[in-house]
Image 1 (spheres, helix red, strand yellow):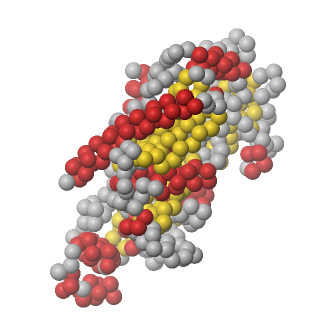
Image 2 (tube, one colour; image 1 turned 90 degrees about the horizontal axis):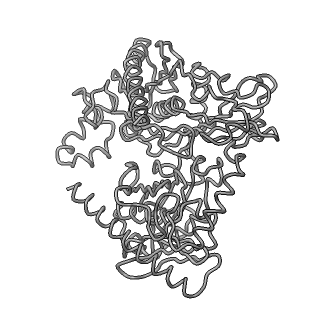
Image 3 (cartoon, chains in turn yellow, cyan; image 1 turned 120 degrees about the vertical axis):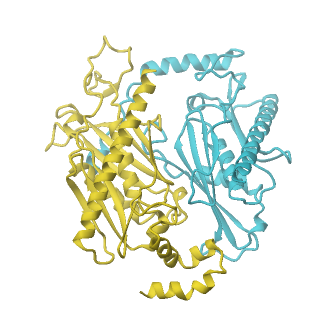
Length: 306
Length: 261
C-alpha cells in the first residue's frame, strides 16, 4: 500500500522525469506500474522465461563443457576428470566435486578477494540437486573396482550475472554431463592409469573402458525460479527484478515431473495455491528446457559426423 | 571428499614418453629450419587470426567488456567504473586503475594451477597505466578484471589487447589503444604469437605492449637468451604486428558504434 501511495505521490513528478531516471529512483513503483499492465520492464509477460541457448563443448581443455545463456545471464560449466582411488565404503563408485564460481568479471558487486555471498550457497545446492535427483549413476565412473575410479570436477563459472543464476547453473551443469566424453585409458606397468589416443598403444596395453565412454543420463533435473510480488508470479527474474522483489521460489523437477526440491528462502508469506502455480509453470519450463538441450546435443552430433 | 582429492592425478599427464620424443623433434625444426609449418599450420611470422574473434560487450553487467579468442586462448575482460575508490584509499587527485587477472580452474591442462595470477595482474596494470588518462576521473577507480577461460599460449599479450578494447568499450579516455604481441626465440629463429606448447620449449621470449598511433612502447619484457641484432628484429616484428592488431581493434570499435547508432 505504501508503495502505491508513493507511486501516486511521485506521479506528478514522474511526468516530467526521464524514464531511465524514474527507473533508478523509484524501482518499485516502476515495476508495479508495468505489472498493472501485465508486462515486465524487459517487455516479457510475467510467465515468460528469457530465451535460452546451450552451446556444448565450449572449452577444449575440458572433457565436457557447456555455455548456457539465459537472457543476459551467461554460465560456463566444465568437467575435468581425474583418477582417484575409491573410498573403502564404495569401492565401485566414482565421485563428483562441484564448485560454483562468481569471478569479479560477472557483476559490479563482486570484487577480487571479496567473493559473492551467494556463490557457496549455489554451489552446495547444485551439488545436492545433482546427487539427490539420481541423474548420475556413480558406478559408471568406476574404472577398476577398488583400485581406480573417476573424480569429476564440475566447475561452473558465471560470466555475466543477470538474475536466475541457479537455473542457468543447473542447465549448464546438466548439459556438460550430457556431453561428457570419457577418455580411453589403460593401466601402465606402474599401476597408474594413463590416457591412450585412438591408435597408439592398442597392442601394448589393454584398454580399461572401451565401452564406457558416455554416461547414461536418465533423470535430468531442471529448475525454475519465480519471483513473487503481491499477486504476481514473475518467472525467471532478471537481476533488476531480483534486487526489488524479496520473495522467490525455486522449484526443481526431474524428467517425470517429480519434485526434486522446492526452496523458498525467507520473504513474504506465500499461499499453497501460489506454490502450486509455480510448480505448474516449472513443468512447462522443464519441457522447453529438455527440448533445447536435445536440440543442442543433436546439433553437436551432426557437426561431428560431418 | 577432501581426503580423496589429495590422491587424484590427471591421466593425460601420465601418458608422457611418446609426446616427449615428438616434442624434441619439433623443437629441432623450429630452431634450425628456415621455415617450418607449426603445429597449427602457421608459418613463423604468422599470428593467429583475430579478425572475427574479438568482440565487445559480452558482459552486460559491466561498464565495458571484451572477449578475445586467439586459437585456443580465450579471454574475457570486464571494466567497471569509474566508481568510488575503496574507503581505505587516501585522497588522490588522479584516478586509479585496478587490475586483476584470474584463470578458471580448467584453463590449464592440469586442474587448478594459479587461479589468481598476481604477476599478470601487476604486468597488466603497468601496460595500461601509461595509456589511460587517469586525470579524467579524479578520486575514483576503474577496475579492469580479466578471466582466462582457456590458456593456449601468449596469454598476457592477449589479455592486454583485450583489456584496452574493453576500456574503449567502457568509454574510458585513453591516449591510444594498447596492443600487445609476444615472440618466442628458438635457436636462430623468431616465432610470433607462440602457442603454449611453443612457449614451453622456447629459449627466450619477448613481449611488447605498444601504442601504435603514438609510436610508444608501454611495456617490454625480455627473458632468456638473446643477441643484439635479434632483439632489434624481434621488437620491430612485434611493433608491426601490434599496429596491425590495433587497426583491427579500431575497425571493430567503429563497426560496433555505428551499429549502436
